Image (cartoon, rainbow, N blue to C red; front, side, top):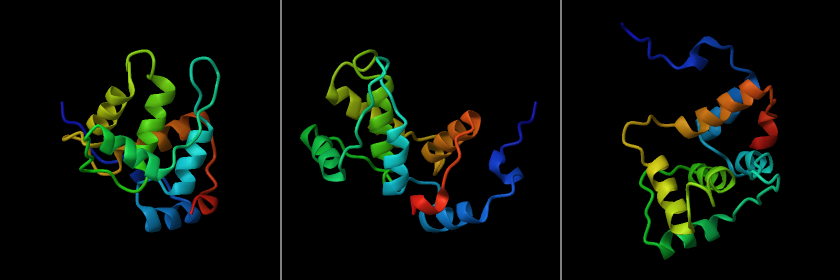
Length: 137
């Protein structure tokens, strides 16, 4: 069986504001998009999580000697926050392993550029969550 490997968004008419966002950031998180995405994240107990400042995130990585080779803009920070909300304290037992998960996710050797943002966008589409593209720039 042959699989068509074109991106699903190649079939959609992309709104002008989304085109502007993509022209500036590609399929990656701007600071505002990251902060907005995190504002919608909740732990299993219903509590929210705050966005992490970029320097704090980098300090955490450095503390454990973890280097991200393929991180672009705020993608790694998005993965950190997502894993903190969804997996930390359950399948991820401590901060070092949380950051190792981020490294494994961001530096996945068979992933394509933009896969992290694409997954986030797909989730927004499935939930019917509109994105105010111009506000995210």
